[in-house]
Amino acid sequence: MTSSQTTQPSETAQPSETTQPLVLPEILTVNELGDLLDVSPVEVIKRLMTHGIMASLNDAISFETASLVAVDLEVEVTSSANASGLVAADIDDHSGDDTDETLEVRPPIITILGHVDHGKTSLLDAIRESDVAEGEFGGITQHIGAYQIEHNSLPMTFLDTPGHAAFTAMRARGAQITDIAVIVVAANDGVMPQTIEAINHVRAAEVPLIIAANKMDLPEADPERVKRELTEHNVVVEDFGGDVLFIPVSATTGDGLPALLDAIMLVAEIEELKANPQRSAIGVVVEAELDQRRGPIATVLVKTGTLRLGDAVVAGHISGKIKALFDDHGEPVTEGGPSRPVRILGLESVPSVGERIEAAEDDRQARQKAEEEKKRLESSGLRTGISLDTLYNEQGTSVVKELLLILKADVEGSAEAIKGAIESFKTSEVKPKFIHVATGGVNDSDVMLAEASGAIILAFNVASEPTALKKADAESVEIRNYTIIYQLLESVEQALQGLYDPIYKNVVDGLAEVRKVFRSSKVGQIAGCYVLEGKLARNARARVLREGTEIIDSECEGLRRFQDDVREVSEGFECGVILKDYNSWEENDKIEFYHQERTN
Ligand code: GDP
Image 1 (cartoon, rainbow, N blue to C red):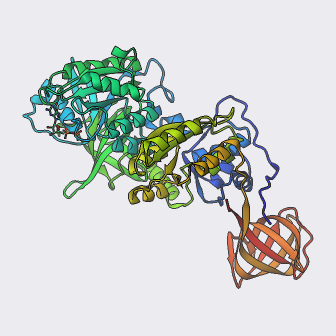
Image 2: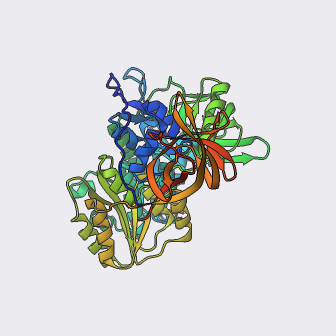
Image 3: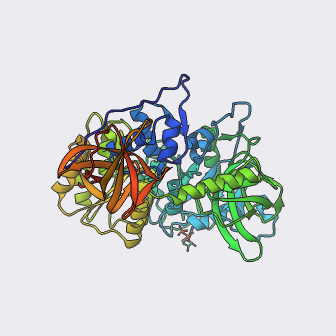
């Protein structure tokens, strides 16, 4: 039997009386979602199934997946990330209880991106050295992942890991910390493939952009050519009537650096970057290592609040208590406010880069939060990526309005043709949007961009780099490979038009035989069974077969060993089975426990 039927709701969550959306954690189990939505976990599992997602009670699901169920039940939800400022992009600043009175202007956080050898590292070094205060530290530079300088007495923070790989890796982890992106283009070389990648990564992140035309000291520098080439990629600089600031600089001579810093301050002012230094700190780990002598050390960029000596903190599944804080000159400090990079000692182990770190009320709370996160990580089944199939399934819920695509093709001609054809598929419900189109194989950067943006990668006549494949697999990013244009177009068109009917097959997990029928005043009939093959699981679907004919297809509502409710019973054991809406057991009935798997 194939079954793609949707089950009618047996329970409906009551919409909350207030207009406040229900806050859901970023990751939660099916069981927890049921509790929060006030419906049974079975209802949640059924709803997930209608979206093509097979999950069991204790599987962890992402906020995005959970919100599909919430939308079905007409419950408005928001991620705890948004509510508490979990995603760094949203920590900005107007979140939670922060009001106009508590918010204060904070320094901008800047990332430098661009093609290899165009001078990103040189520019970062030159900016750092241009800071007068910096010079007072005797030229000892500590590279800790980020540094802060003052320009005309205004502080600004630079991320010391240039390039879009780091930029998007952070974003993929929900830690978009960059406020302003500076793309460096060597004026003697012009716009290059990684310049275009950088532009697309910055666009996808919706971060304001400044162009620094570097190497202006070279006689062959041609900034006008750079401007023209940028226009071809829809980056229109001010001279050409656009709004992108274009600053000629030389990292070697230092020429143009003050103008670049002025431009950054100008954009920062327009962005009105604010945070509340009074609240408990939330930051992002930008670098972390294990020091033989001092233990785990992490560089944290504080996004909001103030991180203090002695604070109990939690970074993902790691907790700790801050034993020492250092600034970016290696000097001990007692605290770090918004946009300040600080090195901290006292974490129990080394956190991942991009991990959010926050101050807890006390050690106990920090440990508890870390423990909860550990449990969540341990449970499997976390789905992050998006696929053409889930896109189809999500259409009805109006969760997905845009199909974000990355296209990698062998030659530019095919890339353009495919892009043009797909863009014409726009429907009233879904429209395709290309966030990156380039020639060449699928690389790590493409996968990270896809993951961070929820995009699908279309690979036409190109291979994927092995590391990119691994990453895509780990992050559930879909790479679709094609060698024939019309097949590529057909599958995207089908997905967009909703012709992508999911087909499921039943996979049998276990078979039991009814040996005796019991009656219970509370639950009705209980079938006393013996497990002949495989295993039985509570909440699985089950078919009752009598002499080879299906009597009912229902759900297992209860599984008992003696008086105890159990989750699973294995082959060779006896147990009691309760099926939903079924009370007509007969001895010798067979029960087939199964789950459904998508076949297309
Ligand atoms: P990255 O790969 O983008 O980080 O580039 P680097 O900062 O490593 O610079 C690549 C090369 O370009 C190095 O040899 C630098 O010395 C050189 N370079 C960087 N900026 C300038 C500049 O403004 N003028 C000149 N002439 N050379 C530069």
